[in-house]
Length: 576
Image (tube, rainbow, N blue to C red; front, side, top):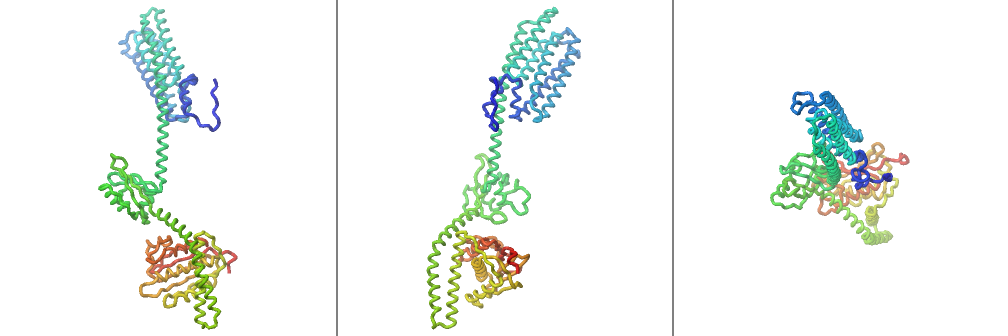
């Protein structure tokens, strides 16, 4: 019967494996050949067993040679054919050495050599049968021992062969001892009891069948164990990958307070700058995170979890630790580190989204009074009873209405993620007009604002409304925080160009900004003032990004602060 051919790309079904040893497939000469490719580990183990079998055969040949060539052979009786016994024992030793060398070659070749079991076992059992037949006749006194010795060889060979081949060698062994019994009777030697011959024959068939069945069960159990082992290894790798890639930090701490395992998130949260190229295995928790060690000790003492976050790592990330026993009988502790900054960013995103929706609904309410104020201002300007100073005040009111309306439009555009509308702007002219308009609102006595830089013209492509709002936010921030107590704020708008990259910087002469605060300047809703909203610098930063510009804080040596707006490089069409 032909075996149906599997479709290309189809996965082999596990149920097909038992047919290597039972049913129609059991007629195959080597039931291990097909399983060699599917189970390389099992095949390598069988190669080692085959090598041990060959070594045992070499031991048998050495014992037989010892009996033949040493005086100890007289203890088992007189030899009938000494010359034949010496030839058989010598040949048996030589062939055993050859089989050992071949088995060793199979074992060392490993996966590079497919199969090889069937020829080796068949040749080895054939040699054993010949030795049993000839040596038993040459040494009648050692006949029962030699026949009994073949029982183990047949049992070991049945582990590697299919059932028909095992029974065939059992029949061959039975035929050999029966033929040797008849040969003895023909030569008139001392006859062996026929019952002994029949008992050996029954033993040969019984051992061949039982050992083949046992071998089949052992191989099935080995395959199942390999399959379960592979599944367990795969699950272990998946678990390790999941734990390693978790955003939650996971740390395993032993009873001595040392770190035994830490995933990538935990290493990022706990690792110091000088620890970049070294692992955390074996490092004390008290050295990596002292506050974490204190909380762990407190939890081990009273079992109470602290719900307040703690600063962790060189960046001062806010982390909420949670503790759990690894096992009920183990002193190891699992520490889960939840990065609360991620939750804060999510809350900020939700707040910004809510602010965008609120801004859209509030824009109409703001624009109505602005439109009324602007309309009333225009009506007042038509009056002939106003003097020059009053008209100047009306002009300021009208300009601020337009500016407020522009701010509302910018906030709405930011909430809606509208694209910027860049226009050609001369930064020098813009800075001069900005200072003039600002002085109309803020007197010189309250804040001194001046322009610095050697640029005569500095053309850029930028949304003018966005640029106005960015510079206004930076200047207002400098007026509020960029001066020492009792002094008037002194602010500079510095214009420069480096490698055709224009920059505008807002500098003050205040106390500067601490490093811990500087790292969070552009986060939404972050403020150090009780009356601030924390949105000014954030909106300015987002407007800069919308125009492909970069807004950053630059520390000034000796005091003061500098916010630098780096605009996109000049296009060839903008060059002077």
